[in-house]
Amino acid sequence: LIIGYSPCEMHSIKGGMMNCQKEMKKAVDCGYWNLFRFNPAAEKKFTLDSKEPTGDYQAFIRGETRYATLLKQFPEAAEKLFAKNEEDAKERLESYKKMAAE
Image (cartoon, rainbow, N blue to C red; front, side, top):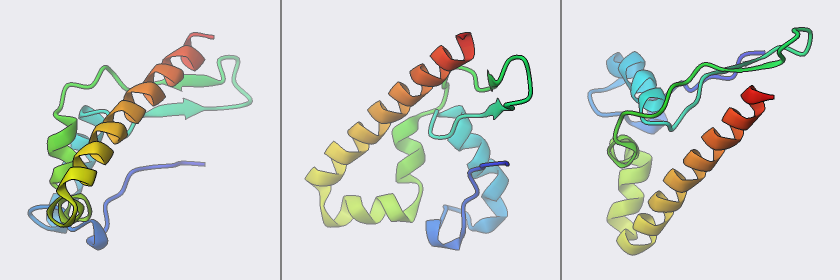
């Protein structure tokens, strides 16, 4: 089973779908998407492959029309939701780190 981040036309990424792989890399670099492996048959079942985020999380989500549209229509709510989204991503990474250390 592979679960991946793959932008589609509905994400409306800047530069179009020809930049899909760049968008995937940005998602990992900023911590929006984490890379890990889970193999129930392996001795070490969970392995975290992502490193600490180095990219700009907020810039990443604002680069997709689905988020930018929310920001235009409901700026105050969007700012709160974007901050919560980033905080949730940080918490998720911390939980993955704990799982990987077990």
